[in-house]
Image (cartoon, rainbow, N blue to C red; front, side, top):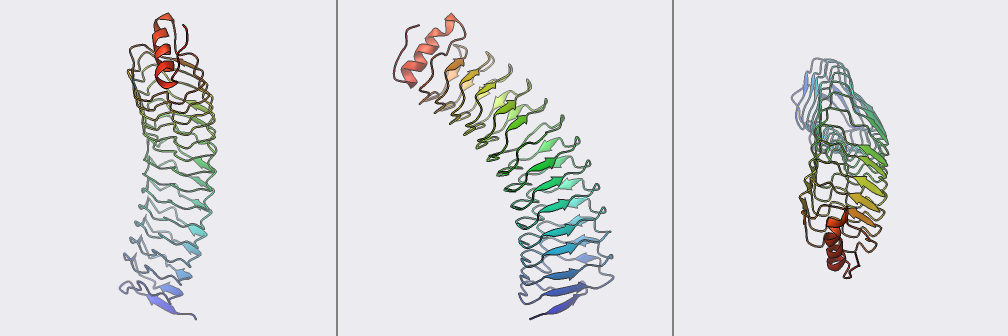
Length: 342
């Protein structure tokens, strides 16, 4: 059954589950908040050039909508405007748009590609969260910030280009992008957000200027074999490399003072690590179950947390020079329940 309607700018069709087709009248300038929210049978909508604003949650839950063309003149796509449009495969965003609101395309699980126009300067947090079919996206040069969770759980995303103007990547921005194999972070970025569970990511270079690898940033990046940490980093957070089971070695730069608890938990292939004298504290269980670790160099003055090297069964050296032999002995004694002769 087909049910059609004309929107003149004042009506609300919220939760009209029988509505299948809508024409927005010429002259309407704004689609109000929640206007078509929950119209789960809506398949076709025609938006005239007079529209300049798409309000918050305007098409929230329009799960049958497969395509939409946003006309020139629209400047902002409101918060959660297309949240839950799970059948949406294509959308045209005009050059006039400057703002994509928070969670604007949340769980548009059929969306495979989208072009963000050059005029966009702001992409809200969670804007493309759970767009699980999205394979590629290009972020325009005018964007300076990628918000929290922007591409979280975009499990098909294989490639993304981040422009040089971006200086900040929010928490969980790429969490769960399990098909992402490589990404280039431009110089100038001071916060790298989170790449947790990016299980196909193989290489990563942290740009100069980043001072902290946040908690769980690379947790679950099980294919990561090569990572470059710049001298500007001072802190490696809790669980930062938890489950990075493919890399065999890592260089921690001078300047790092703190390695958080569980930082290298279950890094099964890690065979050697050199910890600089600048490190004063290593957290609890930082290297637990690094079963291939055979060489560890660290200062005798460093504070070592509880069970720091538990189950590091292959550990055979922990000394940079003769002054550190006591540390080596204690590591065996405490965490491997055996000792070795110096």
